[in-house]
Amino acid sequence: MKDYYYLGKITRKYSFKGEVLLKIDTDQPDYYKKIKSLFIYQKDKLTLHKIEVVRFHKEKVLRIKFNDINSEQEANSIINCEIYLPLNSLPNLSGNKFYYHDVINYLVIDDKFGEIGKIKNIKENISQDLFVIDHKNSDVLIPIHDEFISKVDRDKKQITVKTPEGLIDLYINS
Image (tube, rainbow, N blue to C red; front, side):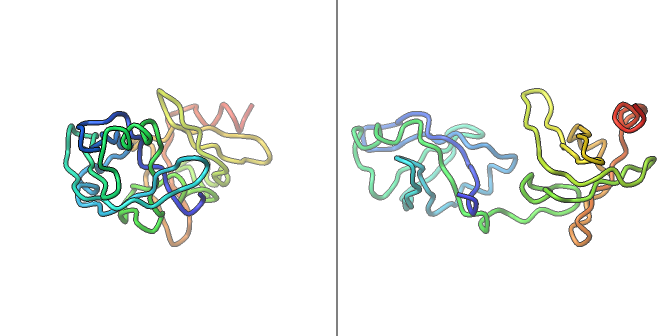
């Protein structure tokens, strides 16, 4: 599934005609209102399903009618299934916006300290997601926050950050 990204999860059925509600995990919900097909992860495999009708139910919840799901019983079979789309279908981002999977191995440069190291992972937490940066075989954790990200250079595969006073000192000078 490395060529796919997680879009969301089917949470419940909506009608007796096989419609379901899909809770999407995105900052750009409008991008998905014209989606024509998606992949349902079920029984350890991804299966392509074409969409007959899609509309917003709530801000990040889509009401979907698939071409091949026409009853409550069929809809029940996909409740709680995860939904994926091909990576190449992601909308292009510009400026300092990025997808987590794109910045793995990017070099992180701090305005004050210079090169910190390369991003080896993203730690997703409830309160704050973090860059996990390899600095001389030790981890440096930097919150992923718009205020801290000065520049994302896709050509050079670098992210320039301006971290709060003392944050980098916790890792580098200890």
